[in-house]
Length: 338
Image (tube, rainbow, N blue to C red; front, side, top):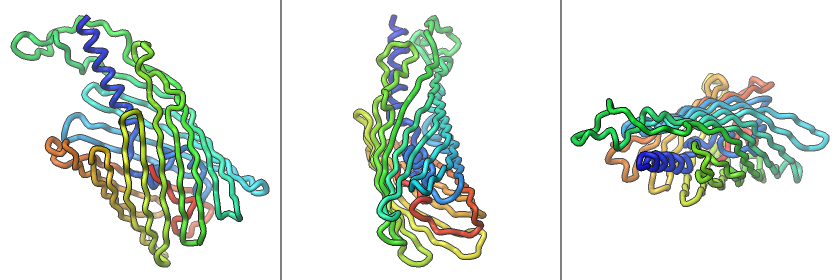
């Protein structure tokens, strides 16, 4: 009975961690489909591909590793003045000593309406997704493996487990508005709600491990300060149960003419969840590929154990376009805040 209760508590802790983690990336400029489904198809070009990898807490314990691959395209109905966006999103996340793993497969769908002579664009989208969670029980430790002096991994565990995986459907949605008063100024604000149906993620079919709603508010601005420099401040706010996160900062982009490297960008952000981290980002666009490297410098109380190290994240984005000309970041091409 004790072992059963212990196991249940351990799994609840993993569930609570999943509430806080819930597929987490620092880059909210180019990894857009992990911001809001309303961004599907919201870019200049024919199709967009994005790969992202994040490695976190490697200096503390087994690292949290997250991988994302997504694609989106669009269908334009010019006579009706709207765009339909569609795509595919795959996320893979492994966390902790017991390899708590989440696999997500989703189909983002969005619609974008041009208003006031293309000065205002209203977008909304949904993300139906299937999730698969699993846990490796063999990597857990139990009280009966204590031999009276020390922990002995050779002592077998008598506990029988009901299951180590869960499959569930999850639904998310978002809406955003983009305002472009001038050619060199664009402002975007949006909200999204994740886990609308609050799926049960329990391995025991107990019905008491509910994935809580996650609310997200995001915004950014693209401000051209010269012919070849843009400044892009941005923010996101997330709320899930008792958990919350505030993430804000900005980056600058410098554009080059007739060069294989058509732009370079650098930025800094602050994530204020328990004074979590300062994030530094550096990237460039090379031969049409947007490459962004972000590093989280841990400043929370965990920094004693982590020696200040937090996470390394790399994002690769490519947009297929009819034109070979290098273009500045525009309202529909610029990623939005997460």
